[in-house]
Length: 137
Length: 221
Image (cartoon, rainbow over all chains, first blue to last red; front, side, top):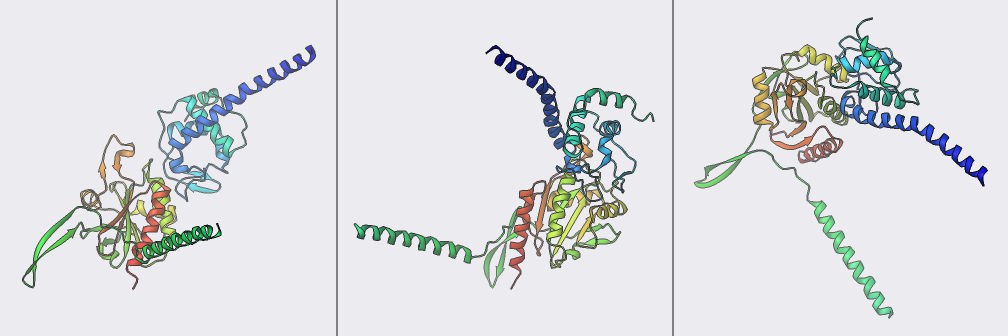
């Protein structure tokens, strides 16, 4: 009886520990989805495939894994030509100055879990550090 | 007992028949699209009798420049139905969605000599013919069926507001600096507005494409 209870307790502890991280990932993903829909999907599309030669795709693009660049581009926009999957895109992307570090982390989480290889969320610290150094390199 | 059952079946068949006939007669009369916009009327004398004639809102002559630098007037849509909208190339909000939807219309009616698309920029200072040319190319549009038009701002805003019944104006508080509606407007061969659709939604675009086919039917004879 005691053995059984102990086993149950251990199982429960392990489960809840795992689910704290999982919960955060799920939260970031869900919030990220909302933010992506409002701020990004107009051009990059809900399916992340972009639009013709006007707006570059995120799905299938290696660029999205570069979280430092992603943070800076989302926050400050960009004006230079960007090569995505061998194709140049030169239309400027507007800045999203009002997005907070958390929100940018959530968008990067969503994009990388949906179309990249990530299985856990991107922490705020990654974004905060990236934003400190935008344009310095 | 059997008789009653037989009677029931009999009446069911009658109801079905009536429904079928009603449906069939509805289909017999072709659906026609309304004429939209403000209307006015005049009283004329025809053969000594007074006749009241309705005047519908009609798109007036226009002159703009397209993505190839050519002057485009109302002559370009002579004998054609066309869809029109307002946008600007640097628009971060609804324009990309509208252009994606319009691309569906373009693909559906590509090569049809009776169909054209006219997209007007509401930011002509930035959207020169050269800028529109690049935009059209990047969107995957070639040829003359889809015209991207620019011209004097007053003229574009005037035709947008007064003739196409669509909002188009400068507004510094709006994202991107311009305020415009997301409407696709369907014009017939006589320059009457026959439908207005929400170009930011899939439903609006599907309805437009259905209505374009209904409108084209009007000219088949």
